[in-house]
Length: 274
Image (tube, rainbow, N blue to C red; front, side, top):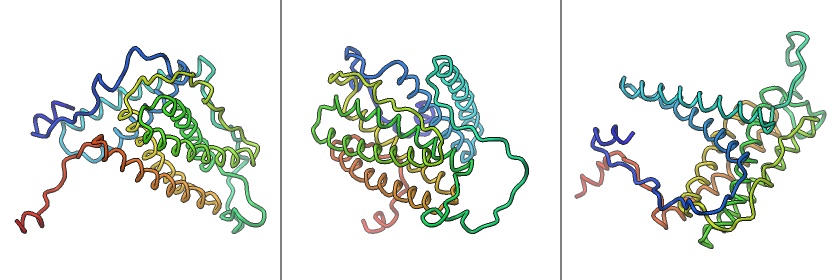
C-alpha cells in the first residue's frame, strides 16, 4: 500500500507508530476476547476489500485486493475454527425447516407496535444477532479503554460511547428473547482490572470511531432487511445516536490533530477567486 501511494505521488499516511503501543503494559483483555476481536476485525477487512475490488479499474489494484481477500478468508477460517474449538463462538439461533413455500397473507406482517406482532423472520434474526454480537465486542473494548485512557476528555467520550452500546445491547437482546431466541453472552468479564494503558489515546479513539462508523453501515443493512415497523424505528434511532456520537468523536480527533486529511478534489472555486 505504501508502494502504491509513493508510485502515484501521494503522501504515505502517518497512521500509527511504536509510540502508540506500550509493550510493557500488563494484559487488558483475555486471550479469548483478543481472538474474538481479531475475528470481528477480519469480517470488517473482508467487507472493505470486497467493496474495494468492485470500484477499482486498474489490473494491479484488482490483483492486490484479490490477494487481500484470500488472506482475509484464510484468517477468518482460522479464527472461527479456533473459537469453535475453545467453545467460545456464539452460534446464531437455529430455525426449524420450513414445511413448504408460504406467502404473506396479512398486513400485520409489517406491523410491530400494535396488535398481534409476528415473530422475527430469518433475515431479521440474522441482522439483529450479528449487530448484537458486534455491539457486545465494542462494549467490552470500551470498558477496557475507559480504564486506561489518560485524557479526561477522552475518557468522557469513551464513557458516552459505552452508555450508547449498553442501551443497544439491551434492546437487541430483548428483541431476541421476546421470541424465545438466545442472545450471545457478554464479554465484559474478559476485561482485566489493569489501569495501565497498552495503547495511546489516539489509537483507542481511532478504533472507537471505526467501530461506531461501521456499526452505522451494519445498522443500515439491518434496516434494509427488516419488514417489521418497530425494528425499523429502532434501527433508525440507533443510526441517529451513532451519527451524533461520531460528531462528538470527530471534534476531539480534530482538536488533537489525530485525524489525517485524505487527498481531495481540487477546489476550483477557491482557485478562481485567488
